[in-house]
Amino acid sequence: MNARTLLDRLRRDGPTTRAQLARETGLSKPTVSMALANLERAGLVRAVGRESPPRGRAGLLYELDASAAFVMGIDIGRAWIRVAVADLSGRIVARRDERNRARSAQAVVRTVSDLAHDVASTGDLSWSQVVHTVVGSPGIFDPASGRLRLAPNLPGWSRRGLVDALRDELGSSLVIENDANLAALGERSYGRGADADAFVYVSVGTGVGMGIVIDGELYRGAHGVAGEIGFLPLPGANSSNPDARVRGLLEQAASADAVVRNARGLDMRGPLSAKRVFAAAREGDEQALAAVKQEAERLALVVATIAAILDPELVVLGGGVGHNTDLLRGPLESTLRGLTPLELSIVESALGQDAIVLGAIATALDTAHELVFEQRVGGRATPG
Image (cartoon, rainbow, N blue to C red; front, side, top):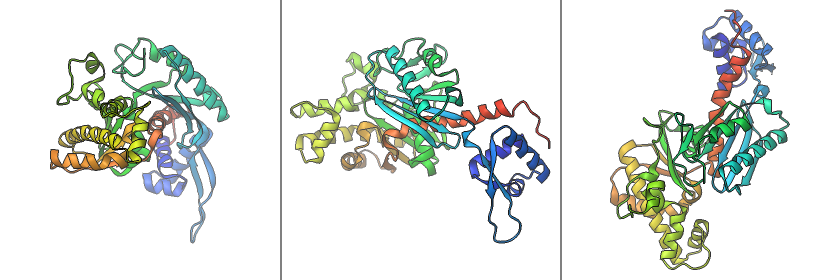
């Protein structure tokens, strides 16, 4: 317990002397010295020089040995696969992004495995040094069935055995988490949510989803589907379309594909993508601006619903569509004023396309610290 307490302090506060640790924890100096010696022998802490006090004796500084183990974060999307490996301080030591050209779930697993092992090699790591992996993906993992639910944008991704196949390739210490949830955790650790007790991350891109953070913790709901806003009802939407039940009414009406449909309905010509529609809007194209306005009005319904139910401090917009706040903000806020008197702040993600992979790293670190401590110290008694 003493060693665990000291390790947590060093992780949080950085280089600290034995005297400081004793004062902050209430442990005796001999107890701190013995516990630090245990941790040093286990390779979890190291001495890093002496402090420079204005007067008095300089104490030896100790810090977490961040090279004791490594974690991996993986973001699997329809268009891109992003992989990063970090040490126990969260410092990324290797990173790679590749377009997702796989056309089946099995091919995605193979691509992810090859990319993950390549990234570890790039960081001069053996695979055994990676103690925990967190994978961000569309959908919700159901432990009872071992399948991912609600992931229609990745063909075959809901088949049984997929998570087991990932574990076979990347090791048993692996969890798979909803991508919007991880993006919210990324913003909590490194971005807009760092100083907010309650905020939501709304991702609008290939799909539409939301991660909810309350009192600094991810909120999942009773069945793990809190934040699946793609299934919100939408006035005037075509609920008889079979795709609406699979993807949800709101996702059908507000995702990147919907932006393209809006633009075509306004007689925009040529090969179109959501990215091209927003680019044309920035150049003043009237049809593109009208399509963007329609998208903003639909997002305003989402934000008004969120404000009434959750009352968050922030709504963080992300995803390929959500990152266009320079164009969306005006019509979104104008529509909101007509929908609700409730006030909230709407901001763009600080992390951009890295939100999911950084959220995966942050999540993996919490587990990795526990794993490494138990492996190296947990079986020993710390004198005290």
